[in-house]
Length: 346
Image 1 (cartoon, rainbow, N blue to C red):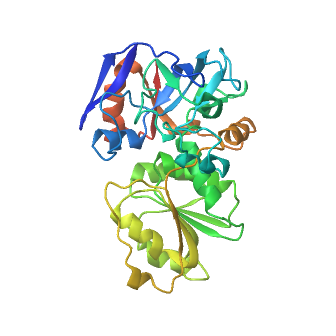
Image 2 (cartoon, rainbow, N blue to C red):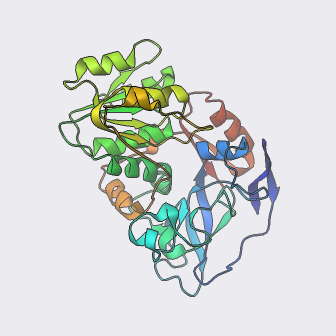
């Protein structure tokens, strides 16, 4: 089969690999019908994910059809259309029982697919712990509607969930890339009084304005975002800030735009360490929440999609064949032609 493979820092290559086989009774083999490229794949490419293993097939955003299952797999069967969770988790350890599946104690727990074991930018993928990692797609939901459930949409859902958003709140979202827009969609489910999206890219600002006109959009290059947010909020800043951009400047913007006793949720993955200027922050009494997504709500997300409450299909701006994946990466990494997300077909 064709598989896009991490060779060395800076190098991915499309090559032939054997079709995966069942290795454990909890495994499933999924024929990939649609996959996508995530910014985390770019982090692997550029050496920002030390735990990524050279030689693995990359990719952790995918949907497909179950081909084979191990003897212990009971939640899905051959022929089922499924989403594939970015995380593998046992469902039984201390962390899983508390819903912290990113920290699952299994050897394949957490983000393994496309990082430590072969992922889904391929024709087939082996999914460990498939009872937890696969969710059946409702018949009314298309592959394109379900494509982002297992990763970027799960991330947005988790971020909104842990941010304790109330209906009277002003929420600031920093970054309108794919994760930022998925976070926006999930924040909208909470019905806060006001949502502000901060984004430097003119094309992405236009995308948000066109698709979500009820949301206010600001350009940090044209306005002092901190001063503006404080001027329109009654208590000196946003009640909740979600930082989804992942730069040093946006990290500092996040806490500065928050009112005292606000929640600052960091969704972004950074290329380097960030600094908390504690003397300057003293007295703001902020609550920071950050880390890897606990992607254990995929079933609920699929239900919301089936009910018409979440629609991520506008994010798919380009579609490529697997044999064209290098062109897809070039487009996505360089943000050309108004790209938000790409879909990759076998």
